[in-house]
Length: 346
Image (cartoon, rainbow, N blue to C red; front, side, top):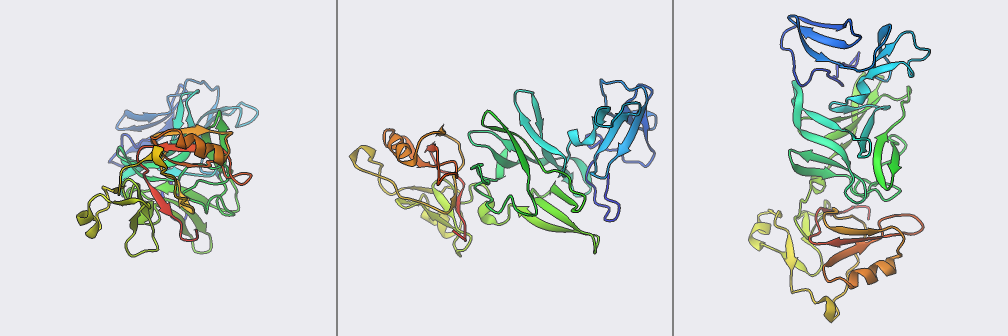
């Protein structure tokens, strides 16, 4: 499916089995399924278990293609199948990204394989519930970008969202983020697309020019690239040399850092002596490190969190994970601190 004026494609039914020729038929089969066939062979089907006495295909203004029972009192009650349940590379208002482990449902974006090939590519954008929820992009099996943890107000790595332009709604269950979506608003045409190059971007339609305006691309700069500065490194986009080490650490390989290869990160300048009086250095105005090895408590104060960290020599950092009432809860990191950046505005 494409937008009428721009020709921009936002959903492909048979992306797993593209049809190279133009002899393609879209039809409602005798069993009520929507099917795509080529040369007499079915290449895609809704394969719905629901039956409809009078199936009707509807394309709504939201961009949702739905197969409904024409004899039902409402399209919502009579919905048999809808494209919004099967996202491809584009997330539209009204569509949900889902990570519901209890229901066994996961829905996420998958990029195109190439700019002119809609088959599944190697980039995905999804909800991750490892500890505090965050949105994560993978390129193959490797993380490329993460939003940072949800701190009740915003994702720590994208403090400019939500805002007046993009206000996603979130559904939580048992501390897990199970659904992210934005209600449809006919006054503003928007889409979020994960492209072949691994960029996830919010686009807004300029109706006067019939043109999509890119608003929030991510990764938006080199410091957004996952683990840009390696373990115990911190990225600063406002510096000519983007990576530096946390206080008390030094580049693991000075030779590599001199040629701006920061991937090995930093190492302690002297062994940790937590039982001999070593303490902490405050670091503020940053995206919190990824939660690879951690401990989380929702009720502790920051002073209690500090005391808990001091009791365990494997603790490497601690923070309030929730930005309400001046900060609350306790998040403790163990092991390497990965993917931290400063924000220019502090």
